[in-house]
Length: 535
Image (cartoon, rainbow, N blue to C red):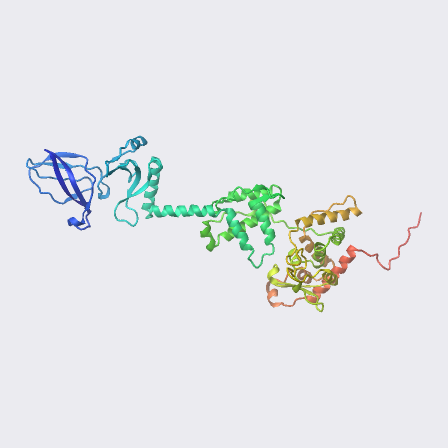
């Protein structure tokens, strides 16, 4: 309960009003200097007779009401009956506010203002100024303050009555949890701003920048093309956007597993199940990257929507190809390579002769090749899949190709073997080149068989073809695996440091000879052909 001191004045016989009122909490200074002015007037006075005089003094104000006794000559005292007083605070007039009532409120007298409490939402009131401005306020003990204070919610008109009630309820819930509504609203505004900035598209752009800085990422250009085409947008040759991901502008924190599943399903049903599997891998990698502790807070991520999704949910399985080129297809491939000028023609031939990966051959540089005394190509660890350097003995036919390649010198030149920019950049973007190669191969096949068809194949199938042919040449399996860069595994990788260079050189020489026999077969020697006798 709180302590109050009053001064009253007589207006006319038997009529009194409060002239001044001071109040103080019971734990404050009991002297007059510890009291604070309070200007709300009591609105009801009821007379009651008493038989004795009681001098004016500091009164105790109970929650149920306040009793002020004034000694007068006619011994009539008055009991002031304020309305409900929450937590010992002087009461405000209370009524169930409506829009009609709010619109009818008159401006306060000049230099004054008054409040009316809402009878529906605790603590909510409307304050009316002398200019007629009506502002919703919440009266409560906000965190960090020991006394009730008013905090503006908004001006009536800009804020509806129901909106003010909803805000007041929300604020009261926050106060009960020990949170300051002002601080929470600022946090929510910052969170909303972060969401607007951290869209899925923006995070993907950050991810694409990051993958280019990784030491071991041989497919960064292919990954970027697939991600932009399948996750962001597609454009035609005239740069006109033909498709755009409908949740590309969505805050990444709002992207759901349903969004992802729908997109993957659409790609699968094109039908393009292989691409759908790849894109699923990209999406999972993007969210895993964004969920790293140093990033997720900045992106506003609290959960990974890909966490419980698996390829089986999309009815996807990793495509395992077993495609190898036949003798006829190898001949057509080599003839097409012969007809294709530098840099692609020699590049195609070196792929078939060495069995190395497309990127490893396309991005080869002259410093990787040892002198003629050793004839060895060393693929550095930063360009090799396993993260270890890989040696490739150079067969005679490969050396002939190397000798035919141009070497660039002077300004604005580089060291790449296969280049259209004077060696400064390696060849890339093989989609159109592959289409041209397929057309040329089919033309070669139809020279022999007009009805011939060329089944779909990819450059990686050349590695599988070389590996298969090495087995056909009875090359030791371990040696054949090392030729194509499948190194030792387990403890062998630690303890067996022998490089098998002579064995790999012999294997590649045997394969070059076999390839030459396939491309330009010669008739068998020492074979006598007998004519079939008639009859």
